[in-house]
Amino acid sequence: MAEFAQDHSKSPPPSGRLEALLRRFARLSYGVVVLLIYVLASAALGLALAPVLWGWHHFAGMGAALSPVLHWIWLGFVGSLCFFGFGLHLLIVVPIFNFLLPTRVKPFKGGYYQLVAVPWFLHNALFYLVRFTFLPFVTLTPFGVWFLKAMGMKIGRHAFINTEYISDPQLITIGDDAALGGSVRIFAHYGGGGNLVVAPIVIGDRATLGAGCCIMGDVEIGERAVILPQSVVLPGSRVPDGEMWGGIPARRITRDEMDLMKKDIRGEEEPG
Image (tube, rainbow, N blue to C red; front, side, top):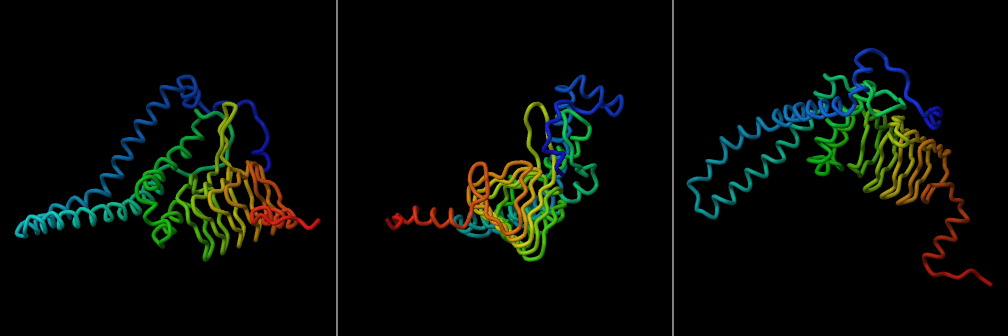
């Protein structure tokens, strides 16, 4: 994966007439793709909503004979059940769409307006339907782990994932007993200089990612390594086994440095 850290100033030549046309009318092509994504998203949301609307139609009227107060409580209860029913159905519908559609993301670097970027765009568009609606409600449950795996994320045994701030799940590998703290941001892409880079992320066995840290594309974190909270691990970083990294940008933190930090936090002075 080291090649993704290099600076390629130009995209590869168009692979055919269709891509040449797409690049020539980039903004128009982008707009058309976005509209198609909206249609696709509406189809997925509609399939997840359909059984919920059926349930509302059949069960909401059961409280009609109750007193006005109990009737509204009943409607609120049924409505809440419908919300969770919608979310659970969405966890099933979206991976099916992701499986059936051309969403097989491959590492690449080049301009944003390329055919090779379409699977990446489509994969994340589907994933975000759940990430921004229902994923926070199942992040720490078996339903959340199942959904991430169904979307292509490779998750080892007993891995602990306490974040929904994820992108590009197909290109993320989490090892056995690894721990991702709250609000960890992990995404297998980055951009700059007119280029989009999509590159895998590998988190080793028993590695620990502290709360709120940021892991960008083309990063490998070794076994038993520790990333301190709120740190930013830049693209191309290779964290060796057992090391502790922290800061912005993240770098190796020795045990002596860590001990000094702890003393400073506690307000302890070094002996004179």
